[in-house]
Amino acid sequence: MSAGLAYPWPEPPAPGSAIEVAPGVLWMRLPLPMKLDHVNVYALDDGDSWTVVDTGFDTAKTRAIWQTLLDGPLAGKPVKRVIATHHHPDHLGLAGWFMERGAAFWTTRTAWLTARMLVLDEQDAPTPETIAFWRAAGMPRDLLAQRAGERPFNFADTVHPLPLGFTRLQDGQTVRFGGRDWDVATGDGHAPEHATFWSRDDDLVIGGDQLLPGISPNLGVYPTEPGADPVGEWLDSCTRFLARAEDRHLVLPGHKLPFTGLPMRLDQMRENHISALERVVALLASAPQSAVGCFPALFKRPIGPAEIGLALVESMAHLNHLARQERITRAGTDDHGAELWRVA
Ligand SMILES: [Zn+2]
Picture (spheres, rainbow, N blue to C red):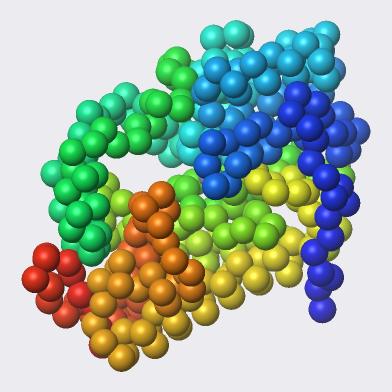
């Protein structure tokens, strides 16, 4: 029987300040201009320098807060290493900025390649493949027409240019930083080859978005790999992490509060998606639906225009997983070109 979740610090650090969560390990927060309005970042004491884990977006506001941190809790020694748990902009947006100031960059090869590709792949308009993907997923026609004429969100909008040169982190490796040896364990589903770090010297686990309390990280299918199965990869990753998770672990997550109770949390994260898959099957058993048509079963709340992009990729992810399991199959298209799904 595993213990419930507990949060040793009920309040997060104020902007520009830090909380020491273990000897030499500082927890800090940066704002995000989204519904999920913050990201956690950490600084670990290397004696004569700091290792920073994750960075926030590259915005003037975030850089100003970092300057306050560098002049405050981190004053007196330089940041010589920056680690990104995964390639998402809220986690490595300022990695290049730290590199320009003398830091080495550590991340997984997939995170590096993906970030490097996306930061260089700036688009003024959605690609034809993206528009076709949205149409097939059932995006409402008026919204599709509007989005087709707008500049899309670009990775480079919130990610600093990445200079060449990184150090590769790999599953199964042991690395040393912050006065501890850490086992590197990677997971998939939210971001490919997402790194987590498990201390050999105390109870700390750096979880990024792979090990989060309270919120379910987005699992999405994109036009870059329309047949991907991130839900399957996520479920497999949760199972693998369960084999190493213990109640003693203090998880330092990418969002929300540090927590204990990781075995139970991994069970919950798995269950969330398994029950979502069952709700989708039940909906499709009553009538064929598009990915957008599955929103009520998946989210159980209205999805507004600001959320529809993330909701759509998440719905496609669940449909792809069910299709791989041969529980559902394609059922033609509707009058607007949306692909419909039915139970097999
Ligand atoms: Zn993420």
